[in-house]
Image (tube, rainbow, N blue to C red):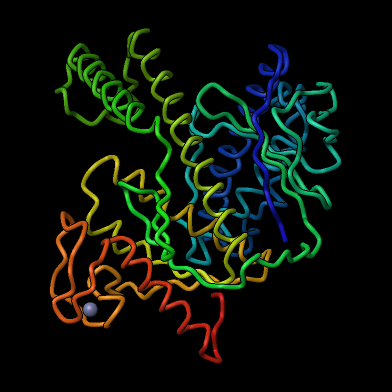
Length: 395
Ligand SMILES: [Zn+2]
């Protein structure tokens, strides 16, 4: 199984400069290849005798001209341009398979990155060696063992990370401690409620940071509007193609601050989710959860919600790979499953259950319910029912 571990790097100035240059080279090669791809494809449409573009051919073509036309490319690892074009080929594969949109040009400052193949770097404890650059310190050591496949160095806000992909041999299936089942209801007030009645409160600093994020993004948008007015545009105008917004140094600083804050919030949530999903998969074999789409789409109006929704998808992703490693089972409720409206004691479904109702008494059997615990119990029942069916699968 391929597993990736993303680790923060502590590069020195020389190394950070190299990273930025290699990421720039990767972006240039990707964009060059995409433009060539489009040009050659159009030419092929006119004349079917011409070859159709492929990533392998484009890599050869770039290699043939780079010494002459782009000599600065030679200053960084040859992997940077080569892997970028291979990734373009994958982007087209994904597009043809209907998994992704048509490949777009990479923009400077948006997910800057470059990839190394396993012969171009080495990992030892908490450091990574890149030829021509020496050892770069990592904040922690690699979590997985197995054959190292590749590494992608990327920038998030103003920090550099490396994501190392490892082919872990059939992982030892450490069975869950308690072979039982659990239902998990995800929410906003509590990160998760388990059918056992446990509530996992989300990370604390989150609210304060969100407030700061809101304030920062408001002030940034004011600065952007001011810049547009200065350029003779309306404050809400879309910037015409080819025109660049001239933003002040202050706006640039605010933007950097905001993206650092985004990264910090994302990290806090990610840590909390890892703790939660590790704990659940360690303790339970069968785990019932909701289809996360429904709640996300229907009830999401606020920023807090949008962020929570993103972590719902991340929660499910983590749960699925962690249960797979342990041979467990995730049962995802049908999107119309009314986990909050059904009484988990007698099974009668209520007509409505407004969000404000945190506790309720079932009119049919008199059971007193905590809204979220009741939902989690219904998800547990669903998980158990699926488990007892002969066709149960983790899909
Ligand atoms: Zn009832």
